[in-house]
Length: 99
Image 1 (tube, helix red, strand yellow):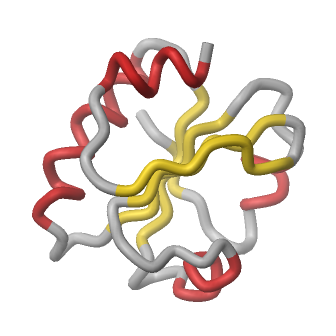
Image 2 (cartoon, one colour):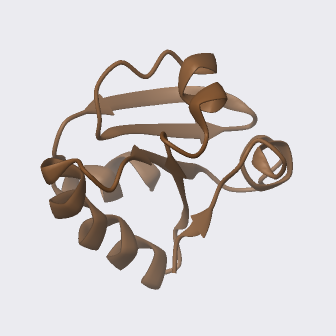
């Protein structure tokens, strides 16, 4: 299951992670986010490091990372953003970026 990422656990769960982390910025009212959700959860089930940021609950994180549209998927590696995808993204593309 994807971890819920908040401002309180962002550093520990994302920036200090030993492996690449996919962070899904989403909201409950966003149709494309609801279609992206099962893809993100499937990656978590396969052992990838995955976190979800509800932009309504964590507007500060959304602002910090300049998330203007959702879903926005950001891959962090070694504490830095290395990829950003906006919109519905296929599982295979995400896997290739995480591997």
